Image 1 (cartoon, one colour):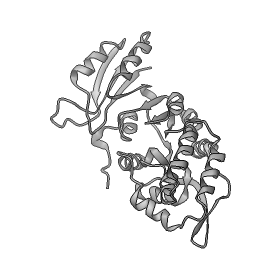
Image 2: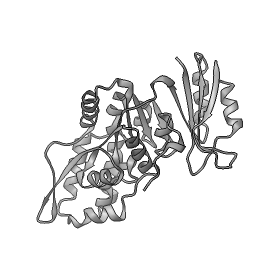
Image 3: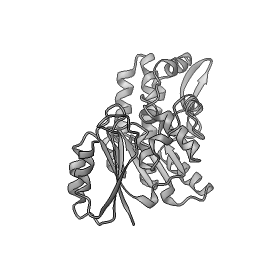
Image 4: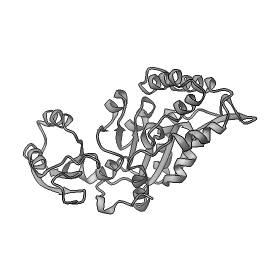
Length: 301
């Protein structure tokens, strides 16, 4: 088994130097080689690199403690298992920068109240379904015009989201957008970015206004892990060929159930449950973790 340490910084703030690489190589028992994953843009600082080693790290906890103090992210893996065939991703605060329900609440004059419930649910302090139904009920009577307004004015893709999904598509990786949010937004984001499948909750609408109800079964954490299992089985994938990314407590089952679970700028509970916690980099970090070099990224369009 050849082990691997991948170092990844934010594309807007490259943090890796040759000296950085050498300092960590010296800590890896059985270090064999390194390779840059990001392009050489004429700067002394670059975005991402792989460090390969074949020894058992007795000092791994010490290395991790040192890495957590850095201004870049890190991922330990078995290099033979980094190839993925299925991605399951959360939407709100992961693929997009906002929580859609909080933005709808702003138009109803309820953002502070609803955002507090959202935050508690994401921290795992409230039952997800109960918290969702409570927040949707508070939006009863809101004009559906505000759905499009929220999408146009508030919803922005997270940095690297378009490149991530387009590059995965080029590499024949199936991508699922499974959200505890709403189909009005997941359908648009999936169409924009190229996700193969999207699943979310359906808002009740009557006479151009929200009814305050959810139509059908609530899409929750169980839906996320069930979707991962469904498509992994459909494609006859091995466990290590699946990857999941999210930021909140509702994402924990899929993060723990995937071959590689990634917490993205996440709440503490999700970060603690993940194999890899990204705090500095954007979503292209997933590509570097999978061994895809920057030169092979699909350009955002």
